[in-house]
Image 1 (cartoon, rainbow, N blue to C red):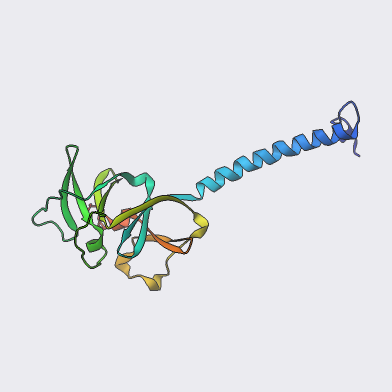
Image 2 (cartoon, one colour):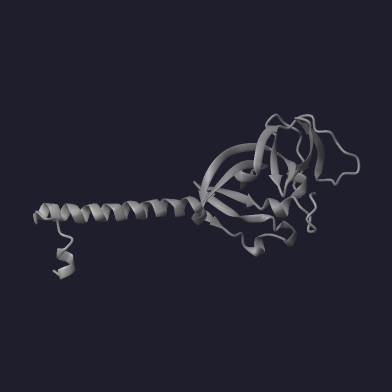
Length: 188
């Protein structure tokens, strides 16, 4: 044993006291490492609101979602782009509603009771996204999210951040900045 190690030994010199001292130090180090690891793991989790469009499941970052409401009383706006279903009055605020089916080039379906409007706040603008139904809120580890191969999408579909795999499900994660805004930064 080196001389500087003897200075840190307990005065009793008993093996159990020495072991307890080193175990206490090791436990504090382990506890510290666990706190750091938990914080790092929390950073690697994506909190998503998931929803359906047809048979596919999509997710958006929960921090952008303001609320989820029933899809009712959408007022059509003459001359609006085809993917803008209309506007709603939400507690005195007029909010445009984007039909994600139309925006993504999917076939139209009849309105149903399951349809919802996900109200989001992005780039200081409040928009509604009309979806077929909302699934759940979940946490997805970054380790199960993969980039979608370029060959699988066209240039105008670069609004996909990645695809998450969870219990045999594939969840397409949207980049709201790209999917709901034009290239010049104007909301669609």
